[in-house]
Image (cartoon, rainbow, N blue to C red):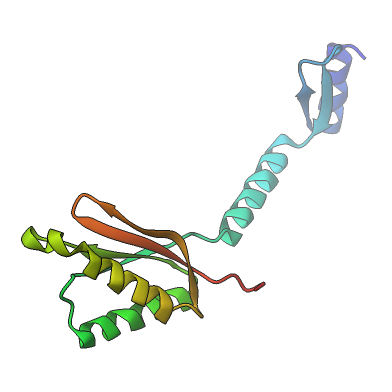
Length: 144
């Protein structure tokens, strides 16, 4: 059908002539209510965004000389974060001469890993970056 005939037919019905596939030979067009089509498309996109889950990353900071009570307090926070389905980055910050005792930080992170083993698993093992040692924990998947 010629473009002119298609335009006339669309005007008779009171709708729009929309080019669906301009690269085809001949180009493919469709008679539709374009405003309603745009509205439905935006509505579907909004619904899809609403159902998306955002990845939340929480951070808990320790020091090599963190006291037992403070460790337990922060561990409970890590457990709560993992129960909520959030990722947790546990970091140990070293200052000055504490850099000589990075093994204390490593021990603290491995202890934390064991303490929250039933709730989370290690996504990124403990590694040293400048004066900070960090480890990334993720909640255990429900399938396991």
